[in-house]
Amino acid sequence: MFMKVAKAYEALTDDEAKKNWLAYGNPDGKQSLEVSIGLPTFLLEKSNHYAILCVYLGVLVVIIPAIVAAWYQHSRKFGENNVMYETYSFFLHVLSEHSTIKMLPEVLAGAGENRFAADAGNLAKQAEISRLITQLRQGLMHKPRFEHPIVLKGNTLIHAHLHRIELSPLLCSDLHGILANAPALIDAMMELAQSQRWLQTSINIIDLSQYFSDREIQHCVKGKGAVRGLREYLGVTDEHKKGLSGMTDIQCADVMRVCNIMPMLESKLKMYVEDESEIAERDLVTLLIAFDRTNVPDGSLPPPVHAPRFPATRFETWRVLVSDRADNLILADKINSQSKVVDHRVKFMAPPLAGTYVFNIDLKSSDYLGLDIREQVKISVTPAAELPAYAAHPDDLNLDDEPTLFEQVMSASAETDSDTDRDDEKREEANANEESEDNILTEAERRRRKARIQRKKQIKQSTDGQ
Image 1 (cartoon, rainbow, N blue to C red):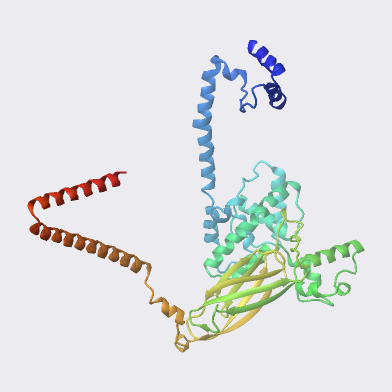
Image 2: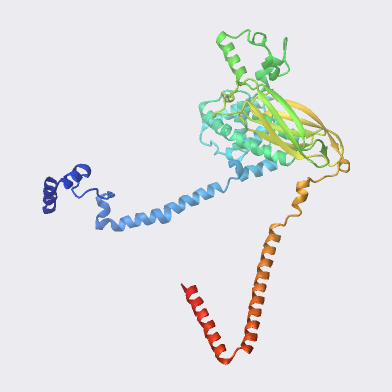
């Protein structure tokens, strides 16, 4: 209390203390910042210290290691692209070069990510799945290879989605879980098919990813005014589009809106070897896939994919398949760019023998059916023996005359050694001269010379010591 009264008196009587009080709230001036932590009172009670220590050790020694171990046990099941190793093993066992598109929904349903527990106790789900199986087996679903309840249920739900069969809310939640995993699983299937060089299987997998049934565009490809596919249908003027006569104005406007969303591409393909005018045997060939989304305004990005039945937002992706005339898959790649103008390059080895080769280039949409592009590119491979002799640039030839880093280091070391040898020779000559002079000098002159040399050595030593 006395200290507070003294500080108050000082603030009232001393002008400097008063300024400090007004500026900093203390007559002594600016004070250092103090930070404190408020703890509950029960943590400070001595009777609770043993319980608090037990809780602390339990969290530090038991709970945190258990969480880390559980996370590690879960994460070690997954490989690249967050796909389970069990799924890769299943795909490798089931997929083959003869896998048709009707077989792929069952392959997708058997992935480890889709093997959720069977609904043994839910009679309503079981009854609806049995009804769906009976309906789909009337020519809508390939004969299942696996009769396991979990795989059979997933296969049924995927076929129901592809054929646009309405499901109850109970099964819709299960279907949405399968569809959410589908993009990553299809990428894994494509990776396996590419590694095995299965062209037709790769095409079938991409067709599955488009999530359309032929029924949706059947009215466009049949009857009067029919077109060959969805790409040609999008190019038809609005007043001549087939199938709109029986629709209301709102429905027609919705169809036009979706047609404007779907990508219209102007593509260009080119094969070449960088910095070369010709392609020789076993050259590294670059394939340029350039396309322009003509339905997208300049400076804009394409809209999300129109997929109202898909549970998540999707963006356009395209697949490039390169094959030869014998339908051997050479390479496959994925284009994720969302730009209006896309220049995508892939590389592969030229054929080992000279001649003329024709390659099939498939640019397939991963999201829309009927928008695929297939073109053929012809190249001439020149024999390596006919290539002109390589002539090095004069500047490159001059580089051979310059010493390498190793040679520079070795020459510097040799110069140091030669300098050391010259110093040693000079000292030996000086010693020899001194010995010859000692033979000429008298005894007294020798002692004075020796004392002078000793003083020089002492001065040099004291200088070096400082």
